[in-house]
Image (cartoon, rainbow, N blue to C red):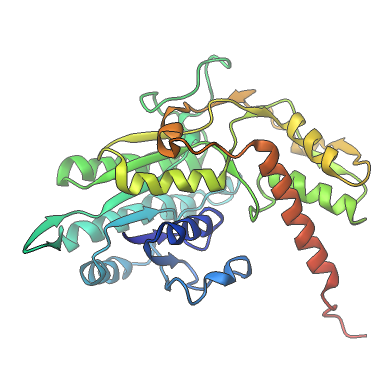
Length: 343
């Protein structure tokens, strides 16, 4: 398959590129800076990567030309401002990237018109399959708190600029599906984690702190509310589901991706502490506590299991161990580098 991936250099994008290559796809990567970060340096030379600013006025015309030239069979749209807390710092930028960027891509596809493909002695027109990766956070706070896992038909009730802009992008993509016949699938994943994730996200942040205590760089792990329960899936499982959607989902479908069961942050931290080579003190930091934290958020597991088939999900214990080991390697690497400060 000839596959475009936007946001290819991000946490999820890097894993998606790797999985697509392993599947045998011909991948074209797009990202804001147009160069692979250090963690993805092994992809340099394997996958063409070009800069893409979906908020720039000239982007639509550039994309029209490239769509007509490259004729991708599918587009996995991952480019986004993906941090809910950061979305409060600059809501307009979050809306420009998440909704505006998706609209720019949709308009480029519409103006490029259905692409012609040769099939034997005849040709036919088709829209590229567009998988828009949204978020389970679009459903908002569970009411009541012990309600069943969220499914595709549940109403949207976003509570921050990130999830509101994602929900709006979902609706825009579905409108193009209904109005123009676009081949669109909406994926709403619940939380995903794994090696290479930024410490701005809770499990990665805890793993980094545990590794820093081991290395003597800090005396304790500082955390917020550990009693909340969240639905975490390993990013490597999630990207396999996304790639499955580029080929096999019904057009116009909304697909919720979650395990359907959660883990308390206290249990996740206990597991990380059990993997450490020394005692790990923990301190509750009042500044990290949020009064509006829902106690439990889960996603319907049916679509994820359908997408992965007989392939078992990576256990959360394996994900946490891999995450901690990745941070250990990062910290060892930073300690072994020579100082930039002249003596």
